[in-house]
Amino acid sequence: MKRIALLLTLMLTPAAVAQSNTLTLKHDEGTTTVKKNPMRVVVMDEEALGWMFALGLGDRVVGLASSYLSPTDISGGKLKPSVLKDGFYARGKLNNPSFVGSWTAPNLETILSLKPDLIVRLTWDGNQNYDKLGKIAPTVGYQEGGEGFWQKGLRDLARVFGKQVQAEQIIKQAADVSRTDARKLQAAGVFRKYDKVVVLAPFSGGNTWAYSSVRLIDDLRALGFKDGLKIGSATLGIGAQISDEALLGIDKKTLVVLFPPGGQYNGADAFLKTPVGQRLKDQSVLYTPEAFSPYSGPLTSIRNSNEVTRLILEKVK
Image (cartoon, rainbow, N blue to C red; front, side):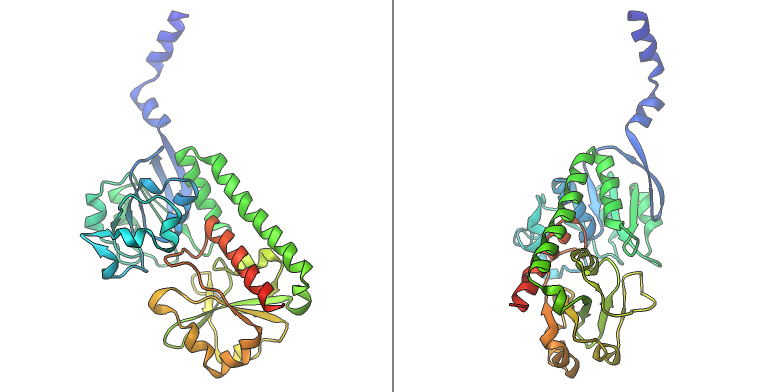
């Protein structure tokens, strides 16, 4: 037995040890070898932050990129404590992460100074800086418009951190919540009045987008609604700008869910005052996400399902 143990010890070379401590992930931007159970993670958006929260790993996030944050939210290069207690950021434990820029303009020097073990981001066609990020730390990216993209990202991170059971539990929880809410809508006769749905994002400045994938629309499909508008070719795989003429063609059996972007981009109030907004007002509900909320993910899907169901049930009382 001693001889066998000695042979096994000798076989466990440094290369074998290194291999046992790493994991190779095939993601939407390539193939990356990642150290298992990393302690210092930079997330390039709230989507990736949501996956970390879902796995109970918010305290591993040392850097956060965001397009929501303004200079008033930052002090000394870090998010202010008051901001960490607001909206989606309060959903998990964050230990004073550094602000590292936005999706499209990351501060590479700041990220380098944080010495991350892993960088996680969502991506889209034409998104840049992957190579530069990859030179700083192993970087994985997931395309937002891809089918099942957040489930793929969550499961990959779960493998990295040894949290596979927890990942499957919260994916199942999100699906169970949708099924429960769908039964509530069915029992209330909602689908007799509205059998279709369209998700509109009114931006400040007057542009309106209709989402075809990921952004709330998938959660509404899970509730039992059919698509109420043909969008055609989607930009970045998630939706397209829609004309007033197309909006005026929406029929009365289509529920309109107004899902405005956050912060300064929110144009919902202005949209409702337009002739198109007035025409659709009686068949519309306004759903406002949490401050700093990602567009998708398990925590977001659960909130989307519950809150939109509540709004719809109030609408059809």
